[in-house]
Image: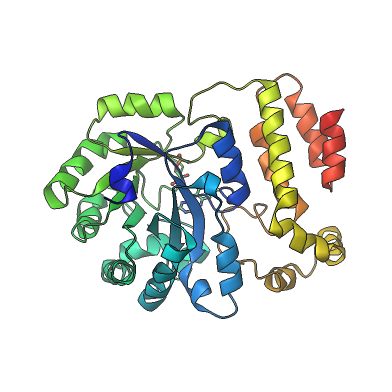
Length: 352
Ligand SMILES: Cc1cc2nc3c(=O)[nH]c(=O)nc-3n(C[C@H](O)[C@H](O)[C@H](O)COP(=O)(O)O)c2cc1C
């Protein structure tokens, strides 16, 4: 039995989100109400395979007992690097390896990874097989319906299911659709049929626009053969989405404080503090960004959001909206917090 087979049915998964579902945020979500399964943000296999990039890759692959069971998601285009990275993941404490064949970020696609695999099914197959033979962990795939048109799912998902992955997560949109159109729930019955025909043992997870546990259970009533439901942006609207609890202002503020405390304790912060003169100069002047990123061995790519990562304290700010939301006075409080440049400043505002 692998982790995918052990999960209750239906199960809930926190989607991998670059710049969001890092080691800190995963612990906050575990505190609010845990999903059945966590994913890391995606890690580049060529970064892991290179001397220069390995430290950064390992930093991204840090986990705690709180966010277990957890799947490491990886991306890239070099089959040998998929093998090397997959082999390493077992000893790092992961329950599985997931291959990202769906990311629409133009930098990732230009580098031949993510959704670019949809256009290169032979390479996708080779990467999958290489990962598969290099680890005892279950290997799963997360992808989209196709590149241009939803109908492409027939051929593309068949290619993947013919490899018999441990699990297949389908973000129910094409690469071209990004997140701009509603998820194609209407295709779920056909995808279920395809899974049953080609690889009945593959656990099927659907993803796209699922708000919370209640919504997932509704979908499960409609599509009982789907095994699991993955929630991404639902956590932005409600960090308690895995229980469907409607949080009070106090509960949200507690989560924000927890996030700040965990950030302060993290190795990432310690590392940053050591060099903060340089970083804060950078933040002030906006110069030398790439040099400093390089210096920190932080990945330059990929980024979904320019503001997501890489700038120490500033990188916390995009989380504020998650916690300071949906209560009277939230907008003003958030505006004040967005003006801050350090943890003590933020804490003083929160306390007052
Ligand atoms: C900020 C952000 C970062 C993301 N990073 C990743 C990633 O690293 N790996 C991945 O497979 N998908 C990534 N995604 C896609 C999500 O996992 C998910 O497929 C998508 O958001 C649709 O689900 P949702 O409607 O529940 O948000 C990201 C999405 C967002 C919004």
